[in-house]
Length: 504
Image (cartoon, rainbow, N blue to C red):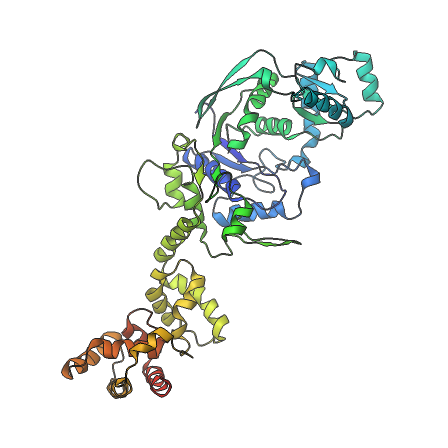
């Protein structure tokens, strides 16, 4: 690397952070850590008309939750501050003036009505209007006006924009780390607006100036910005600055059909497209955090959307991702978003989490369901978690998988009732007698004595085990039966068996 690695994530605070934006932030973070560089967050809030209160705080909270907090940002290690574009606006006028004075930009005084008229004339001729070298000398700008006329318009307070004067008859051969060599014809480009008379720059000027002043070494961003690459490289050239290296990430695609993943896809198929929940007057959009996903799982599945390390490995810690990450292994083609696979990732992280930690999370759910906050022994919860977590994707599913540990069944599954035969009540009564005589009420000991009784009396396994489970659980589901018996205890086991005898 010819200079220290400094990369940025530069979102606009216009709403919640889309999962595609999160992946862009993640890839920047991983690239910085791999190369012992700096990952910084810049807030691009020059478009005040689209500013949404709370969006900036949301972005920071989301990155913190995911474990990819920036090294520098608003209020944190502001080495190149301010990190908010609205607080840098005094900077941009001088750089727009540099381009004017060097002949790389010009003032344009065309009104919206003027441009609409020209656009319609072009459409009538079957052409598309582009403000560029083909017509700029026929429009209302400082390339046509004399210097005195231009100064007079500016002095009168006339509305204007500053446009970049795109060079003509050039073929730009540019390099993208992911896509390789890309070619652009300057004659096909328009003269983009860089600055407006209200004193605010457009994205293109502010972005280039800030990336230069903040010493950005690599620009890693979404594929949708690829068409802006020639303008940005030309702007660096016009200023006489060294351009950063560019890498344009593939799109995240819909799970079904074609096109880019959108919030509508999430609403339709029932999965989040935002890292955290977002609430507006129109309603609430779900977030991965509130849906019960672990941040590690979200980071893991996002990292593999468009990148792999060249092996079959799927589970990576954040540290392993940073160690393995290489932009040259990012795919060019878009990556299909798979909500079911994302649940699989969460399941993997859940089952590898300690039973004790999961029990602490589950305790809150059990307390809410039963109201028995003081009576919840963490040892018992830890054991229950160990028995059920293999069948869960989320902690929120634990209650449905284990409610019978805390509450006796109030009804019995219809299709399971066929296992309750004419002789079952007598057998269950005998089973109660066996259980009453057991002092060491542990799973293995209970199982040994019950099975000895069954063998001695030549009672088939199905005649006891299925009615026994139905009595305790209310259905033929759950972990090892004698683990359930041990955890609910002797008295509760006998009570439930007696209730089943009386009911069924």
